[in-house]
Image (cartoon, rainbow over all chains, first blue to last red; front, side, top):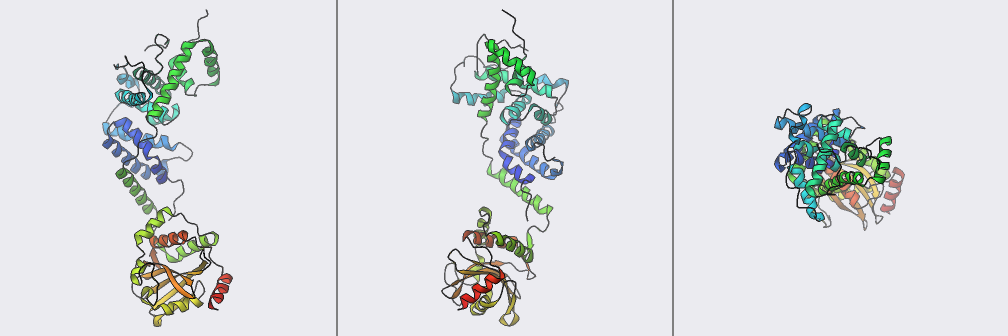
Length: 177
Length: 258
Protein backbone atom coordinates (compact mmCIF):
# COMPACT_ATOMS: atom_id res chain seq x y z
CA UNK A 1 0.00 0.00 0.00
CA UNK A 2 2.83 2.35 0.62
CA UNK A 3 5.38 3.67 -1.79
CA UNK A 4 8.76 5.05 -0.94
CA UNK A 5 8.28 8.68 -0.02
CA UNK A 6 10.45 9.90 -2.82
CA UNK A 7 9.38 7.57 -5.55
CA UNK A 8 9.39 8.61 -9.15
CA UNK A 9 5.64 9.07 -9.26
CA UNK A 10 5.57 11.72 -6.57
CA UNK A 11 8.53 13.50 -8.06
CA UNK A 12 6.92 13.51 -11.47
CA UNK A 13 3.71 15.03 -10.20
CA UNK A 14 5.56 17.69 -8.27
CA UNK A 15 7.68 18.48 -11.29
CA UNK A 16 4.87 18.68 -13.86
CA UNK A 17 4.86 22.49 -14.14
CA UNK A 18 8.59 22.54 -14.90
CA UNK A 19 8.28 19.68 -17.34
CA UNK A 20 5.51 21.42 -19.17
CA UNK A 21 7.39 24.70 -19.21
CA UNK A 22 10.36 23.03 -20.84
CA UNK A 23 8.17 21.11 -23.27
CA UNK A 24 6.45 24.36 -24.22
CA UNK A 25 9.76 26.01 -24.86
CA UNK A 26 10.61 23.24 -27.31
CA UNK A 27 7.32 22.88 -29.07
CA UNK A 28 5.77 26.32 -28.56
CA UNK A 29 2.40 24.56 -28.84
CA UNK A 30 0.45 23.71 -25.69
CA UNK A 31 -1.16 20.56 -27.05
CA UNK A 32 2.15 19.16 -28.20
CA UNK A 33 3.76 20.17 -24.91
CA UNK A 34 1.08 18.28 -22.99
CA UNK A 35 1.64 15.24 -25.17
CA UNK A 36 5.36 15.40 -24.58
CA UNK A 37 4.90 15.65 -20.85
CA UNK A 38 2.52 12.74 -20.81
CA UNK A 39 4.80 10.56 -22.89
CA UNK A 40 7.76 11.57 -20.78
CA UNK A 41 5.93 10.52 -17.63
CA UNK A 42 5.09 7.16 -19.16
CA UNK A 43 8.67 6.66 -20.18
CA UNK A 44 9.99 7.77 -16.80
CA UNK A 45 7.69 5.39 -14.96
CA UNK A 46 8.57 2.52 -17.25
CA UNK A 47 12.27 3.23 -16.91
CA UNK A 48 12.33 4.30 -13.29
CA UNK A 49 15.15 1.84 -12.68
CA UNK A 50 17.39 3.77 -15.03
CA UNK A 51 17.26 6.83 -12.82
CA UNK A 52 20.32 6.83 -10.62
CA UNK A 53 19.59 8.12 -7.15
CA UNK A 54 21.90 10.97 -6.35
CA UNK A 55 21.80 12.35 -9.85
CA UNK A 56 19.56 15.21 -10.78
CA UNK A 57 15.99 14.18 -11.33
CA UNK A 58 15.27 17.32 -13.32
CA UNK A 59 18.11 16.71 -15.78
CA UNK A 60 16.98 13.12 -16.22
CA UNK A 61 13.39 14.03 -16.99
CA UNK A 62 14.35 16.98 -19.21
CA UNK A 63 16.48 14.64 -21.24
CA UNK A 64 13.54 12.31 -21.70
CA UNK A 65 11.40 15.20 -22.89
CA UNK A 66 14.14 16.39 -25.15
CA UNK A 67 14.58 12.95 -26.71
CA UNK A 68 10.87 12.59 -27.26
CA UNK A 69 10.84 15.94 -28.95
CA UNK A 70 13.71 14.89 -31.18
CA UNK A 71 11.87 11.69 -32.05
CA UNK A 72 8.80 13.66 -32.83
CA UNK A 73 10.44 16.12 -35.12
CA UNK A 74 12.77 13.52 -36.55
CA UNK A 75 15.48 16.00 -36.35
CA UNK A 76 18.81 14.50 -37.22
CA UNK A 77 20.73 17.26 -35.67
CA UNK A 78 21.44 16.80 -31.97
CA UNK A 79 25.09 17.69 -31.94
CA UNK A 80 28.13 17.99 -34.05
CA UNK A 81 29.40 20.25 -36.79
CA UNK A 82 25.99 21.33 -38.05
CA UNK A 83 24.92 22.60 -34.67
CA UNK A 84 25.00 26.24 -35.58
CA UNK A 85 22.97 26.30 -38.74
CA UNK A 86 20.05 27.87 -36.93
CA UNK A 87 22.13 30.27 -35.00
CA UNK A 88 23.29 32.37 -37.88
CA UNK A 89 19.97 33.90 -38.61
CA UNK A 90 19.77 37.45 -37.52
CA UNK A 91 16.79 38.69 -35.71
CA UNK A 92 15.37 42.10 -36.26
CA UNK A 93 13.48 44.36 -33.94
CA UNK A 94 16.07 45.09 -31.34
CA UNK A 95 16.07 48.81 -32.04
CA UNK A 96 13.90 51.56 -30.72
CA UNK A 97 13.16 50.03 -27.37
CA UNK A 98 15.85 51.32 -25.16
CA UNK A 99 13.43 52.12 -22.42
CA UNK A 100 10.99 49.49 -21.40
CA UNK A 101 9.19 49.06 -18.17
CA UNK A 102 9.54 45.90 -16.22
CA UNK A 103 6.29 44.37 -17.30
CA UNK A 104 6.91 44.97 -20.98
CA UNK A 105 10.37 43.58 -20.56
CA UNK A 106 9.01 40.34 -19.17
CA UNK A 107 6.67 39.89 -22.08
CA UNK A 108 9.36 40.65 -24.51
CA UNK A 109 11.71 38.13 -22.97
CA UNK A 110 9.23 35.45 -23.90
CA UNK A 111 8.74 36.91 -27.35
CA UNK A 112 12.46 37.17 -27.88
CA UNK A 113 13.01 33.56 -26.86
CA UNK A 114 10.15 32.43 -29.05
CA UNK A 115 11.85 34.10 -31.96
CA UNK A 116 15.10 32.27 -31.32
CA UNK A 117 16.14 28.94 -32.75
CA UNK A 118 14.96 26.06 -30.65
CA UNK A 119 18.48 25.09 -29.65
CA UNK A 120 19.14 28.46 -28.10
CA UNK A 121 15.76 28.63 -26.45
CA UNK A 122 16.21 25.22 -24.86
CA UNK A 123 19.57 26.08 -23.38
CA UNK A 124 18.31 29.36 -21.93
CA UNK A 125 15.41 27.52 -20.33
CA UNK A 126 17.60 24.84 -18.83
CA UNK A 127 20.32 27.08 -17.44
CA UNK A 128 18.65 30.41 -16.72
CA UNK A 129 15.14 29.25 -15.82
CA UNK A 130 15.64 25.78 -14.39
CA UNK A 131 19.12 26.46 -13.01
CA UNK A 132 20.88 23.46 -14.46
CA UNK A 133 24.65 23.57 -14.56
CA UNK A 134 26.32 23.73 -17.96
CA UNK A 135 27.29 20.12 -17.51
CA UNK A 136 23.77 18.96 -16.73
CA UNK A 137 22.40 21.00 -19.62
CA UNK A 138 24.95 19.39 -21.92
CA UNK A 139 23.73 15.99 -20.71
CA UNK A 140 20.12 16.90 -21.41
CA UNK A 141 20.86 18.18 -24.88
CA UNK A 142 23.42 15.57 -25.77
CA UNK A 143 26.03 18.12 -26.81
CA UNK A 144 29.50 18.94 -25.50
CA UNK A 145 29.73 21.44 -22.69
CA UNK A 146 31.59 23.85 -24.97
CA UNK A 147 28.61 23.88 -27.28
CA UNK A 148 26.33 24.67 -24.38
CA UNK A 149 28.48 27.64 -23.47
CA UNK A 150 28.78 29.08 -26.93
CA UNK A 151 25.07 28.71 -27.62
CA UNK A 152 24.09 30.11 -24.29
CA UNK A 153 26.36 33.14 -24.57
CA UNK A 154 25.04 33.91 -28.03
CA UNK A 155 21.44 33.45 -26.98
CA UNK A 156 21.82 35.77 -24.02
CA UNK A 157 23.52 38.51 -26.00
CA UNK A 158 20.71 38.33 -28.47
CA UNK A 159 18.16 38.35 -25.72
CA UNK A 160 19.76 41.44 -24.23
CA UNK A 161 19.70 43.22 -27.58
CA UNK A 162 16.12 42.33 -28.31
CA UNK A 163 14.73 43.28 -24.95
CA UNK A 164 16.84 46.32 -24.29
CA UNK A 165 18.57 44.84 -21.29
CA UNK A 166 21.63 46.83 -20.35
CA UNK A 167 21.92 48.51 -23.75
CA UNK A 168 25.14 50.37 -22.97
CA UNK A 169 25.27 51.90 -26.42
CA UNK A 170 28.75 52.07 -27.76
CA UNK A 171 30.28 50.46 -24.73
CA UNK A 172 30.15 46.88 -25.78
CA UNK A 173 33.58 45.54 -26.38
CA UNK A 174 32.31 42.03 -26.82
CA UNK A 175 33.60 40.19 -29.82
CA UNK A 176 31.01 40.04 -32.57
CA UNK A 177 30.56 36.71 -34.20
CA UNK B 1 46.84 53.29 -20.66
CA UNK B 2 47.50 49.61 -20.58
CA UNK B 3 45.56 47.35 -22.82
CA UNK B 4 42.77 45.68 -20.76
CA UNK B 5 42.82 41.94 -20.52
CA UNK B 6 40.70 40.28 -23.14
CA UNK B 7 37.94 38.01 -21.95
CA UNK B 8 35.59 36.38 -24.38
CA UNK B 9 31.83 36.29 -23.89
CA UNK B 10 31.77 32.71 -22.76
CA UNK B 11 34.25 33.40 -20.00
CA UNK B 12 32.27 36.37 -18.77
CA UNK B 13 29.03 34.45 -18.92
CA UNK B 14 30.59 31.59 -16.99
CA UNK B 15 31.76 34.13 -14.45
CA UNK B 16 28.26 35.61 -14.21
CA UNK B 17 26.80 32.14 -13.75
CA UNK B 18 29.30 31.27 -11.04
CA UNK B 19 30.79 28.36 -12.95
CA UNK B 20 34.18 29.87 -13.65
CA UNK B 21 37.31 28.41 -12.11
CA UNK B 22 38.84 30.27 -9.23
CA UNK B 23 41.92 31.65 -10.93
CA UNK B 24 40.01 33.12 -13.85
CA UNK B 25 37.32 34.40 -11.50
CA UNK B 26 39.97 36.42 -9.68
CA UNK B 27 41.34 37.75 -12.94
CA UNK B 28 37.88 38.86 -14.09
CA UNK B 29 37.16 40.49 -10.77
CA UNK B 30 40.41 42.39 -10.90
CA UNK B 31 39.84 43.53 -14.46
CA UNK B 32 36.31 44.70 -13.70
CA UNK B 33 37.64 47.12 -11.11
CA UNK B 34 39.04 49.30 -13.82
CA UNK B 35 37.15 48.26 -16.92
CA UNK B 36 33.59 49.56 -17.01
CA UNK B 37 32.88 48.03 -20.38
CA UNK B 38 33.86 44.66 -19.05
CA UNK B 39 31.57 45.14 -16.09
CA UNK B 40 28.70 46.02 -18.42
CA UNK B 41 29.26 42.86 -20.40
CA UNK B 42 29.18 40.79 -17.23
CA UNK B 43 26.05 42.63 -16.13
CA UNK B 44 24.36 41.75 -19.40
CA UNK B 45 24.79 38.07 -18.66
CA UNK B 46 23.57 38.46 -15.12
CA UNK B 47 20.56 40.43 -16.19
CA UNK B 48 19.57 38.12 -19.01
CA UNK B 49 19.57 35.23 -16.63
CA UNK B 50 17.48 37.12 -14.10
CA UNK B 51 15.08 38.33 -16.79
CA UNK B 52 14.60 34.87 -18.28
CA UNK B 53 14.08 33.42 -14.84
CA UNK B 54 11.55 36.08 -13.91
CA UNK B 55 9.67 35.73 -17.18
CA UNK B 56 9.03 32.03 -16.66
CA UNK B 57 8.67 31.80 -12.91
CA UNK B 58 6.50 30.52 -11.49
CA UNK B 59 5.68 27.99 -14.18
CA UNK B 60 2.15 28.14 -15.50
CA UNK B 61 -0.33 25.85 -13.78
CA UNK B 62 -0.59 22.47 -15.42
CA UNK B 63 -3.91 21.79 -17.18
CA UNK B 64 -6.12 19.69 -14.95
CA UNK B 65 -6.57 17.03 -17.62
CA UNK B 66 -2.84 16.52 -17.92
CA UNK B 67 -2.33 16.29 -14.20
CA UNK B 68 -5.23 13.86 -13.86
CA UNK B 69 -3.82 11.72 -16.58
CA UNK B 70 -0.36 11.58 -15.02
CA UNK B 71 -1.79 10.85 -11.58
CA UNK B 72 -3.74 7.97 -13.06
CA UNK B 73 -0.62 6.74 -14.76
CA UNK B 74 1.32 6.83 -11.50
CA UNK B 75 -1.45 4.97 -9.70
CA UNK B 76 -1.56 2.29 -12.36
CA UNK B 77 2.16 1.83 -12.11
CA UNK B 78 1.96 1.46 -8.37
CA UNK B 79 -0.87 -1.02 -8.67
CA UNK B 80 1.07 -3.01 -11.23
CA UNK B 81 4.13 -3.03 -9.01
CA UNK B 82 2.02 -4.36 -6.13
CA UNK B 83 -0.81 -6.40 -7.59
CA UNK B 84 -2.66 -6.65 -4.31
CA UNK B 85 -2.35 -3.03 -3.35
CA UNK B 86 -6.05 -2.45 -3.90
CA UNK B 87 -7.23 -5.14 -1.59
CA UNK B 88 -5.77 -5.78 1.80
CA UNK B 89 -6.30 -8.52 4.24
CA UNK B 90 -8.31 -7.24 7.15
CA UNK B 91 -5.88 -9.08 9.35
CA UNK B 92 -2.94 -7.22 7.88
CA UNK B 93 -4.77 -3.94 7.91
CA UNK B 94 -5.76 -4.47 11.48
CA UNK B 95 -2.18 -5.10 12.48
CA UNK B 96 -1.16 -2.00 10.67
CA UNK B 97 -3.89 0.04 12.23
CA UNK B 98 -3.19 -1.38 15.59
CA UNK B 99 0.51 -0.76 15.39
CA UNK B 100 -0.32 2.74 14.36
CA UNK B 101 -2.85 3.11 17.10
CA UNK B 102 -0.29 2.37 19.71
CA UNK B 103 1.51 5.57 18.95
CA UNK B 104 -1.28 7.89 17.92
CA UNK B 105 -4.39 7.99 15.85
CA UNK B 106 -3.20 11.04 14.00
CA UNK B 107 -3.54 10.33 10.31
CA UNK B 108 -2.92 12.07 7.06
CA UNK B 109 -6.43 13.17 6.37
CA UNK B 110 -6.49 14.91 3.06
CA UNK B 111 -7.01 11.92 0.80
CA UNK B 112 -8.72 9.62 3.21
CA UNK B 113 -11.43 12.06 4.23
CA UNK B 114 -12.43 12.30 0.61
CA UNK B 115 -12.63 8.54 0.58
CA UNK B 116 -14.84 8.57 3.62
CA UNK B 117 -17.24 10.95 1.95
CA UNK B 118 -17.13 8.98 -1.27
CA UNK B 119 -17.81 5.81 0.64
CA UNK B 120 -20.89 7.67 1.77
CA UNK B 121 -21.01 5.99 5.13
CA UNK B 122 -22.71 3.15 3.41
CA UNK B 123 -23.15 1.50 6.72
CA UNK B 124 -25.84 3.93 7.64
CA UNK B 125 -27.94 2.67 4.81
CA UNK B 126 -28.00 -0.66 6.51
CA UNK B 127 -29.56 0.76 9.59
CA UNK B 128 -30.16 4.26 10.73
CA UNK B 129 -29.61 7.58 9.02
CA UNK B 130 -26.56 9.60 9.89
CA UNK B 131 -26.72 11.39 13.19
CA UNK B 132 -29.83 9.70 14.39
CA UNK B 133 -29.75 7.48 17.43
CA UNK B 134 -29.27 3.87 16.53
CA UNK B 135 -32.12 2.80 18.78
CA UNK B 136 -33.09 -0.72 17.98
CA UNK B 137 -32.01 -0.62 14.40
CA UNK B 138 -29.78 -3.28 13.14
CA UNK B 139 -26.14 -2.94 12.30
CA UNK B 140 -25.53 -5.35 9.51
CA UNK B 141 -28.97 -6.81 9.99
CA UNK B 142 -28.45 -7.95 13.56
CA UNK B 143 -30.11 -6.81 16.71
CA UNK B 144 -28.50 -3.94 18.43
CA UNK B 145 -28.96 -5.53 21.80
CA UNK B 146 -27.05 -8.61 20.82
CA UNK B 147 -24.14 -6.60 19.49
CA UNK B 148 -24.23 -4.35 22.54
CA UNK B 149 -23.74 -7.32 24.79
CA UNK B 150 -20.68 -8.32 22.79
CA UNK B 151 -19.36 -4.77 23.03
CA UNK B 152 -19.88 -4.89 26.78
CA UNK B 153 -17.90 -8.01 27.37
CA UNK B 154 -15.66 -9.21 24.55
CA UNK B 155 -12.01 -8.28 24.54
CA UNK B 156 -10.27 -6.96 21.46
CA UNK B 157 -9.15 -9.89 19.38
CA UNK B 158 -12.20 -11.92 20.32
CA UNK B 159 -14.60 -13.18 17.74
CA UNK B 160 -18.12 -13.89 18.92
CA UNK B 161 -20.87 -15.70 17.08
CA UNK B 162 -24.23 -13.96 17.10
CA UNK B 163 -27.71 -14.57 15.80
CA UNK B 164 -27.46 -18.27 16.30
CA UNK B 165 -24.25 -18.47 14.39
CA UNK B 166 -25.42 -16.68 11.28
CA UNK B 167 -23.11 -13.80 12.02
CA UNK B 168 -19.94 -12.95 13.82
CA UNK B 169 -18.61 -9.93 15.63
CA UNK B 170 -14.87 -9.42 15.65
CA UNK B 171 -13.54 -6.96 18.20
CA UNK B 172 -10.67 -4.94 16.81
CA UNK B 173 -9.66 -2.36 19.36
CA UNK B 174 -10.83 0.03 22.07
CA UNK B 175 -9.93 3.66 22.52
CA UNK B 176 -11.10 6.80 24.25
CA UNK B 177 -12.78 9.60 22.44
CA UNK B 178 -11.77 13.21 23.10
CA UNK B 179 -14.63 13.46 25.59
CA UNK B 180 -13.27 10.42 27.41
CA UNK B 181 -16.07 8.14 26.23
CA UNK B 182 -15.07 4.54 25.61
CA UNK B 183 -15.23 3.51 21.96
CA UNK B 184 -14.83 0.15 20.31
CA UNK B 185 -13.92 -0.67 16.77
CA UNK B 186 -15.30 -3.90 15.46
CA UNK B 187 -16.46 -5.78 12.42
CA UNK B 188 -19.72 -7.53 11.90
CA UNK B 189 -19.87 -10.36 9.38
CA UNK B 190 -22.98 -11.82 7.97
CA UNK B 191 -22.71 -15.30 6.61
CA UNK B 192 -23.71 -13.88 3.26
CA UNK B 193 -23.06 -10.39 2.07
CA UNK B 194 -21.13 -7.42 3.23
CA UNK B 195 -19.33 -7.16 6.48
CA UNK B 196 -19.52 -3.98 8.44
CA UNK B 197 -16.60 -2.05 9.85
CA UNK B 198 -17.98 -0.04 12.73
CA UNK B 199 -17.17 2.15 15.70
CA UNK B 200 -19.55 2.43 18.64
CA UNK B 201 -19.06 4.60 21.70
CA UNK B 202 -20.51 4.47 25.15
CA UNK B 203 -23.09 7.24 25.51
CA UNK B 204 -25.24 7.60 28.61
CA UNK B 205 -24.80 3.96 29.43
CA UNK B 206 -25.69 2.81 25.91
CA UNK B 207 -23.60 1.83 22.91
CA UNK B 208 -24.17 4.30 20.10
CA UNK B 209 -22.86 3.55 16.65
CA UNK B 210 -20.78 6.47 15.50
CA UNK B 211 -19.37 5.16 12.30
CA UNK B 212 -20.00 2.28 9.95
CA UNK B 213 -18.80 1.38 6.51
CA UNK B 214 -19.88 -1.66 4.62
CA UNK B 215 -16.97 -3.66 3.33
CA UNK B 216 -18.27 -5.31 0.17
CA UNK B 217 -18.78 -9.01 0.12
CA UNK B 218 -15.95 -11.38 0.10
CA UNK B 219 -16.72 -12.95 3.39
CA UNK B 220 -13.25 -14.32 3.70
CA UNK B 221 -11.57 -11.59 5.61
CA UNK B 222 -10.81 -9.25 2.75
CA UNK B 223 -12.07 -5.72 2.49
CA UNK B 224 -11.14 -3.01 0.08
CA UNK B 225 -8.53 -0.66 1.45
CA UNK B 226 -10.87 2.24 0.84
CA UNK B 227 -13.26 1.25 3.59
CA UNK B 228 -10.37 1.14 6.03
CA UNK B 229 -9.17 4.47 4.73
CA UNK B 230 -12.59 5.84 5.57
CA UNK B 231 -12.34 4.43 9.04
CA UNK B 232 -8.90 5.87 9.57
CA UNK B 233 -10.10 9.21 8.32
CA UNK B 234 -12.93 9.11 10.79
CA UNK B 235 -10.66 8.16 13.67
CA UNK B 236 -8.32 10.95 12.72
CA UNK B 237 -11.15 13.44 12.47
CA UNK B 238 -12.48 12.73 15.95
CA UNK B 239 -8.94 12.72 17.30
CA UNK B 240 -9.35 9.30 18.75
CA UNK B 241 -6.95 8.47 21.54
CA UNK B 242 -4.42 5.66 21.35
CA UNK B 243 -5.68 2.11 21.40
CA UNK B 244 -6.12 0.81 24.92
CA UNK B 245 -3.94 -2.02 26.13
CA UNK B 246 -5.63 -5.24 27.15
CA UNK B 247 -5.49 -4.21 30.83
CA UNK B 248 -6.79 -0.74 30.14
CA UNK B 249 -9.57 -2.18 28.05
CA UNK B 250 -10.58 -4.62 30.77
CA UNK B 251 -10.67 -1.83 33.32
CA UNK B 252 -12.66 0.47 31.04
CA UNK B 253 -15.20 -2.24 30.28
CA UNK B 254 -15.79 -3.13 33.89
CA UNK B 255 -16.10 0.54 34.76
CA UNK B 256 -18.64 1.02 31.98
CA UNK B 257 -20.65 -1.94 33.21
CA UNK B 258 -21.08 -0.42 36.63
